[in-house]
Amino acid sequence: VSFFYLLLKWQRFIFILIALEFMMMGLFYYFSMSVSEMMFFYFMCIGVISSVLGLMMMIISAKFYGSDMCVF
Image 1: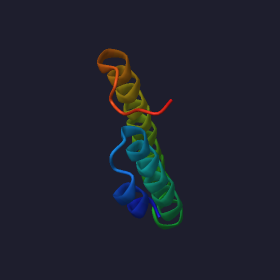
Image 2 (image 1 turned 45 degrees about the horizontal axis):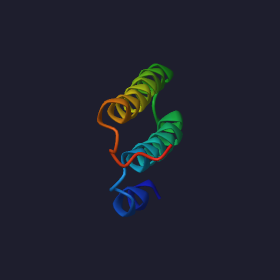
Image 3 (image 1 turned 90 degrees about the vertical axis):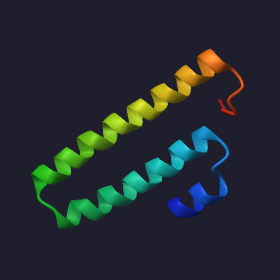
């Protein structure tokens, strides 16, 4: 689902972030059943950090460059 969302909506940055979040949710589901607790915790920390950095990039680019095709 997230790959098709990314394929069809790649023009806007916020849709790219949403598609990446769907990918992360799918990987959370996959890793919760197949790896150990420590690896799942490590992946969860990396996922949260990448999500926060993506939101910061979107806000900073909208603040400094204005019309970057973001939808608020």
